Amino acid sequence: MSFAKAQDLIRLARLAATRRTGIGLDEICEEFGVSHRTAQRMTDALETVFTNVEAVDGDDRRRRWRVADPMLDRLQTRQETAVEALEIAGRTARGDGRLRHAAALEDLRDGLLARLTPKDALRTEADVEAVLLAMGSVTRPGPRVNLAPAVLDAVIEGLRGPFRLRLRYRDEDAPERIIEPHGLLLGHRSYLVARQPARGEDMLNFRMDQILSAQTLDESFSLMPGFSLEDYAAQSFGVYQDPAQYDEVIWRFAPHAAGRAAEFSFHPKQTVEVQEDGGIIVRFHAAGWLEMAWHLYQWGDAVEVIAPEGLRTLVENHRRGDFGALP
Image (cartoon, rainbow, N blue to C red):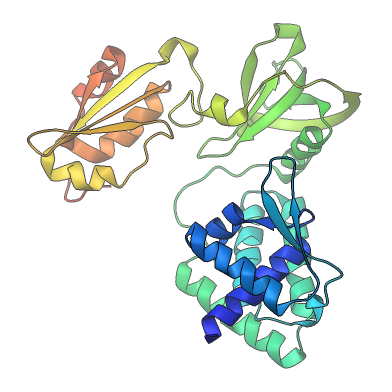
């Protein structure tokens, strides 16, 4: 067995030991980037090398492998990648104002380092810091709106419950709102997605940067049946929702920009059509013309809005041909 295959086998054994229901072939294919046949060979090797492997057929008739009563915690594998991932996630959370998440991620990182010898821990910390500096993950360039950590913490607590929230906006004339939080859309503008019972059953967006204070109430509520934050977010191009603007969006990218545009995912449900002249047409359904216009401006005259008419009119007089680069 090669060294690389031995590493993969140890990793597979750890996954089979730490996942409550074990691990199946589809998950092995995804985790290791291998074919179904290779995944089968890996489970054969797992059963050959380890005596405490259980193979169980579930109700869906799919087999899963577990390592029972594992001694694998004594195997101290290198932790650089895990520590890097936790450090990046922790710094991102702290930069977003999610202090509770940042503290939890830092605790996990410290727990991993504590399991190493002092020498290995120092080396791992040095390696991680070097990678983070090289990736530019210590500070993130570009403008962003700062969110109040206390507000964000209250919102997360409300989502966890779920509990109703009492909101006060920065506008002194705005009344207090009692809302039922269903999700959080994070972006250049972040929105709390919630129902406000006093205004009906429709989902509304509340700008996080305009909330002065948020209080978690000791009042639970029932989430809207069938609500999906992923489907809700897909109705917009960015984070702003405007049902009146929801329509089919069609953009045509010129041949010289087609290659670059093909590298973008403008919308999770987009379709792309290659044209005879080498250009491409991108189609999707969404709202949010202003956010679309902000993005389209970067493409200059390399993109043409075919539909909807309102968006085409909004950007038509602002297309430029003197930009020296594409997004």
